[in-house]
Length: 289
Image (cartoon, rainbow, N blue to C red; front, side, top):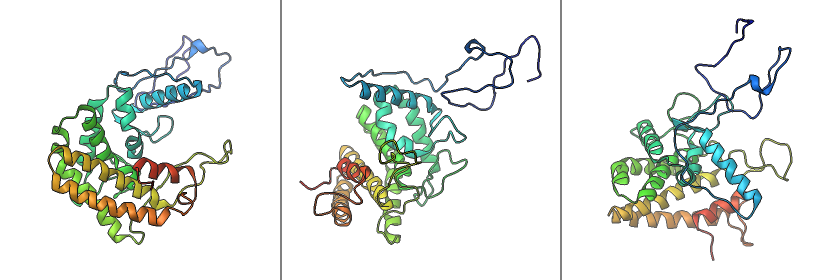
């Protein structure tokens, strides 16, 4: 700023920053009226309003709406407050279903699906970040690249029409085959894991650390692969790919046995007994009765 005594307005042209607080230094006086905050995002309107008997759960839902809205920036981004603001797909993988419930974002996610499709290599590999401009790797962590199949699945669930899975079917099967290829080559017999359970909650609660204890690294990749298989089985059945559905059901049964043989203990706990070691098998529905 040039120091115009009549006053100036500064507005960055090529960046944005999400924030809770603003610090301004170097002024003799400052009031809240001197700063104007512009909140902008892709125009996906709200389509759901939810309240709960628990004020805490209602507040969590409100924060979730804000986090989703602030990260709808042409692509679903990972964060809006630091110098990444990229299409890290782990976020989209976990959030696609909730985003489609909360927001009218079908067209938004269909465009992101096209972007993901454009990043798939002939060998079926996909990157952690789409568009692949910086950070991440190829092949990406399975819990991140699983977003391609997950977003296709959630969009299909929303409208129930066979057109979308049929349009991407060859690419869906190509990417799913990449998981199997990577697992076959890896000593763990699971697709190799780069990030794993990314920044789990601190434990004990309130402890000031960057993240709490994690499960075995391969457990998250196993979950991503098996979850994608479950989604593809549903889509295959819906579009008449019965042979593919049957083959994948047999694969899933083998992987379920492998998962439980490796991590399920006789006392019905999993892995190293952290939160995600229970939530992952429960979400897959593979915990023995």
